[in-house]
Image (tube, rainbow, N blue to C red; front, top):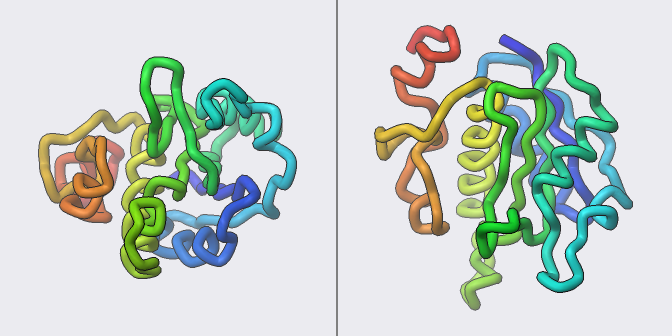
Length: 177
């Protein structure tokens, strides 16, 4: 399987990013490296009128820094992301491409006025990292509610799905269930 680079897009909880790398590697059965954080990368993608960061522009920025090659590159941001046609996104990826980006911003219960739950934040982050990377491997949204490739529009949707890939999705990327 193709190696994966995870790039913390500061400001983000770097410990969370490092912690999720191992389980991401286990799902895709590949080596995962965590790059040094990009500290000023987010500034170029900020939309002042929305108060959010453009995820498509972040993908472009990642591709400038890590040109298309044999590896997959996942940027993990701590800020709120959007695409112009949606209010927000948990992440975005190049389908069957090189780069993806996801954000932990809306995955944190604190945003919703609840107590911080580090375990839940880790689980949500893992699921969305797997989901966005799955798209870079060519996977579309899956109908299996337990598969990480199942579409999520709310954190409740993320909580309901699994962190791994279903047998069908595994086969599609050349892995045995």
